[in-house]
Image 1 (cartoon, rainbow, N blue to C red):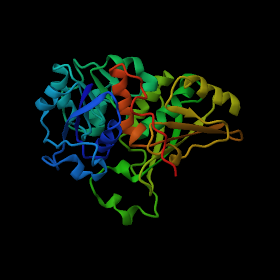
Image 2 (image 1 turned 90 degrees about the vertical axis):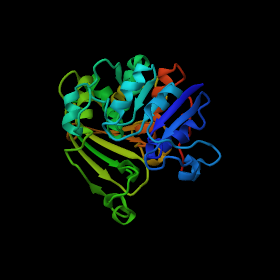
Image 3 (image 1 turned 30 degrees about the vertical axis):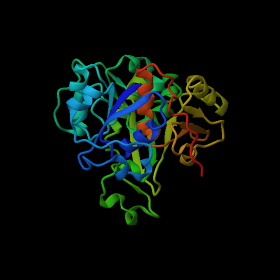
Amino acid sequence: MIKVGIFGATGYTGVELMRLLSKHEKVKIEYISSQSYAGKSIADVYPSLTGFYDISLDDVEVEKAVSKCDVVFTALPAGYASKIAREAVKKGVKVIDLGADFRFDDYSTYKEWYGGEYDGYDGIKRAYGLPEIYRDSIKEADVVGNPGCYPTSVILGLVPLLKEKVIDGNIIIDSKSGISGAGHSPSQKNIYAECNESIRAYNVANHRHVPEMVQELSKASGEKVSVVFAPHLTPMTRGILSTMYCKLRENLNQEEIYEVFAEFYKNEYFVKVLKPGAYPSTKNVYGSNFCHIGFEVDKATGTLVVMTAIDNLVKGASGQAIQNMNIIFGLEEKTGLDIVPVYP
């Protein structure tokens, strides 16, 4: 059995990890932490877990977690995971960080967008945790930087096109996310009266996920890619729908575009390429680790419109983290994740 610890088990991504891992046949959770609920049973904090777990929350105790676990998930704000990773790696414990600490190739980019100081990546074998792109690196990594939710939806939709030089490198991205993407802590922007019957843009062209997208899309393209990113908060609990507007380099039809996607993802269980004319919906991936990709060609303007849908808490966070864990420990990737989406 793989012995697992979760730092930050009472945030949305933490409790989603526990929900998904409850049916993982190769895992036993040995340690969970919460600064807000230390000493309480996880089932008392989240009654949905009643009968599945009889385990109490600890305060953040790195040495204790490392001594008991083979892998730890860090579902914490930026800046915390790097400290935990140093101690874990010394003891041979794998780390999968659902925050931003290990997503960037260049530490200065992290510092610019997230602030704070920590000891960089020196001496740590790190991988960017998008399995469909970096599976081989993930297998060998000590620390995996789980991608952000928006970047997951965007990168999966664009990498095949950039690698095959189907589109140019100037891309407009419109993404809509459910309220859970704003996190568990209450604030004015995510209370019911502010969100219900409303949709609003935020951090347009200045969202922290932009440099992550640019980094990965530029690597796929082989040259610098620029993006204009407009995220929106929508009155639903889960899901991200990203719509990307790209200029075609050549005059390809629907069937040719479909073949580019289908060939690239032909062996990827969690990415479903929809047939031409079918568009993705967040409802069709709700509660699952799947990404649905659809597209449309605007012949009049030479624009390719790519659409992706994911559950921001699963493929956008906790499910993808478990997929990465499965890769690290040599398990079939869909172990614990072979879940039919919830519908309706």
